[in-house]
Image (tube, rainbow, N blue to C red; front, side, top):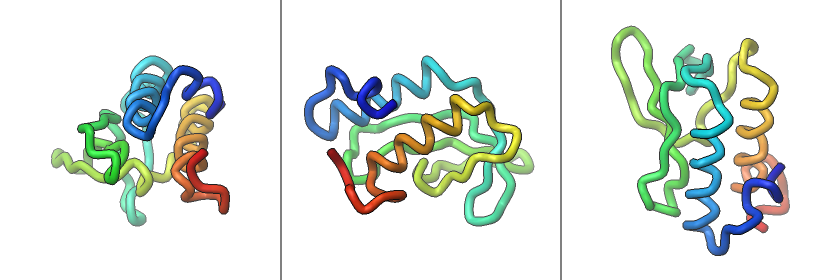
Length: 103
């Protein structure tokens, strides 16, 4: 999946924009997740151009919204498999879930 997302992206900035676009095109929002153990709903995935921060998630809980790193989001059990796979691909590319790091 990472190869599909990054096929025409060069450099981290373009790669992050590409991942952001895939989230927009392939993920149904909102979806349930947890952030630091708290149940939330992810209502948006975005990239503000800061390649050190990476993708962010706008999450909602009890009528309040917060922006967090997408790397801090753990998908809930009811998340569609394509959403979970894209989150896992982003984490893998970011080096969070592997020893390989960015390709």
